Length: 200
Image (cartoon, rainbow, N blue to C red; front, side, top):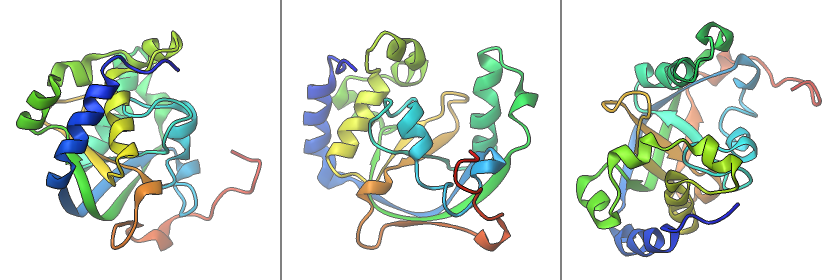
């Protein structure tokens, strides 16, 4: 994967701004295929690491994509497939899960001052077709931003939803969680056991 041309400058800015990172203590939400909705698979971020996502390129950092609202979690699961011409019904059923999050080092990429320092607009973050860029071997702009945050040790990044600008997501890097930072599935006892090895 070819590094995005702006990666170095993004890294420099985020490194400078890292001391101003915020903490997040609250509830986040995830809607996913029931086969992954278990205590073993739900919060690993391995699916995104393998397949890639808007904020992480394939084979890069495992990233757990979480929404700050129930509506946002559902929209992320159903909105984008519909946008790309997929039948949303094929994404059902979904399991909706609440996640208690305590994160000490979070970079808010929706902050206007930080975006100005980065020279990045909201439209640039949510408007790029990262799948097409990855298909040509190119890291996308938001993937470069996510990678820089991960390399610098951030626990997560607050990002705008590509489905609806009023929604925000908080994407977490499990490998960077340390100290008091953690993710915990609320009411995890209600989830089914993990699928046997080799069945997913």
